[in-house]
Image 1 (cartoon, one colour):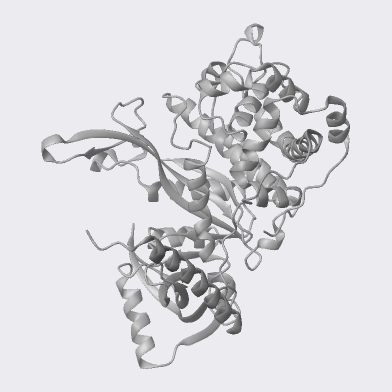
Image 2 (cartoon, rainbow, N blue to C red):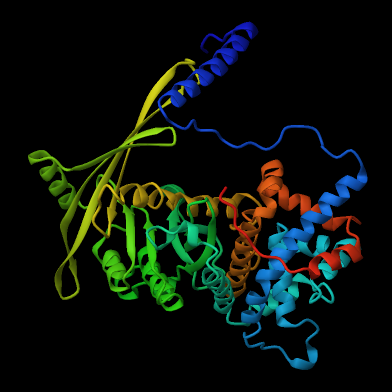
Length: 508
């Protein structure tokens, strides 16, 4: 074991770290850089001085959230009402839209399983509050009723309700401030949903895991997700495309892949938004000719991560042109970083396709950046560097390189952040909720609708202060706790929800 410092040395080290961090911030300000500051949740004691004060804030938070939900849910429920109901009319206790609303609210409130939703949402106070806020819920159904319905209906139509909601917000220009050169940035990424050793349905993918002495077949579900990735940090779920074993190439013994699912997703995206100007933000899997040709065909722009080992001929031409003559260059300061962009336009990329070779024109931009940080061990200011490269669908210039790279391509992280939130912060992305393929997908689509609703709520101007104080997950716990207790005054809530409200998105 290495030598450990004494208590006094450890305290002195922490003090030196704080001093060096302050010194770094001063240096950054002197160099016209913006110090990187991570927002933190309030660490103070409770601010309420009386139960009445707490009740007022709890009630107002519920009213504001429900007002946003009631502004968006009619579009969703109207589309869901068009799903054919396969149940016998005389045996129906809860309408299809009531069951769907119940499922959405279960995810909105971060219930972790069907059992927890049954237990928590049917409590008398919780139930009465839900029925007060959402009059369509004349009673609280059992989650198994929803599961059986999802197993029998065309669950893909649930996703159409989410698309309809986003289309409505686009039509109302709610995201107009965050466009990239007039285009809506949409990030696409694939991720695993769940894995196990039982084959529940023929659609599950399969792979071998373990070493040679203990090799087993594992079955898993993978999804390609599409999110609006806006410049203010919003990552709004838009579409999901499940990989399906049956969609593979059986003759060549190849199962479905992320690229195959991407082409299906792109076709659905084009049908859903035929005239929407789109900027696709893609990771290092997608700098392939067919994917870029799909974007050209649909008249979409793109920014695609280009790794060092991808498209060697494109890299070779870039390096050759950079060596024989000066390339376009732009230097700037952004946040706490000093950046140097250099790019080469009009590079011809040739690739093999059905019917022979084809050519697509791409534009390669490389960003080299440096920044300073305080090393945790040495308590010294150290300089760090990073390098990023993207393929652009349109030529780069000094006028658009910052917009396309910093405000567009780099926000591809928003979908990764959004999926991480769905997996680890309350939405239970990796929990199947049902082993049936159809019901599992149905729950997934309901979860994505709920996440989209919560994102819009959390970025509305009414919640900026409360999110800063409680955090996004803390806000949901705060509202769920309010619904669990007798905090709401029925008459005040009814009067408040009758007043018309306008949704405004904050720039946080």
